[in-house]
Image (cartoon, rainbow, N blue to C red; front, side, top):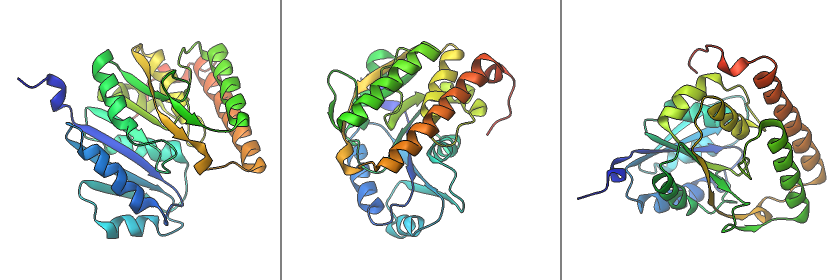
Length: 253
């Protein structure tokens, strides 16, 4: 007899921004990996701003099972992920960054962890003891500092809220999605904070393989990212603890 989890339908959301030279190759690789799982699935790519030929190339490639959404103005990765989630049909909904810094074989690992833990959310974590990560000492220092800040502000026990791969039960997103605001830097954190606020406590970490040497940061990009994520993180804290915003009634996305 087949196990019950063989029937879960998976929606995989892939946000895309300025990747016309690599996106088709990356999608084919992700598709090849996800096809080897036992899960029926759909892939939803969301082109976050039609400012290059990414959307055109994805459509021209006609990769089976890949649906594509695009819009004119860049809105931010978190907005793109939320939009894809709102279109997802799966009872499991996952997203993964499209730049291949995270090895897409982690898709299978997160799916298995969902079943092992009967989880609400599984977070791919570069700080998991079994993770293999290649990134600079600067990134390590920033990551650890941010972990301490999140622990202090929100009491969340997850060691890495920002790695670009996570999976959610549909029931979690149905409750959480209409309340989300963040569009750019701290959308991953906001989902976890709101889910925790509504009692979804079964949140666990899974190991990933990550190579940030594929996307080196310039000093100016590092500074912009630090300022952006701190501003967004404090905004989440303000909405949660001072405005009680997330517990108020909200319309669907």
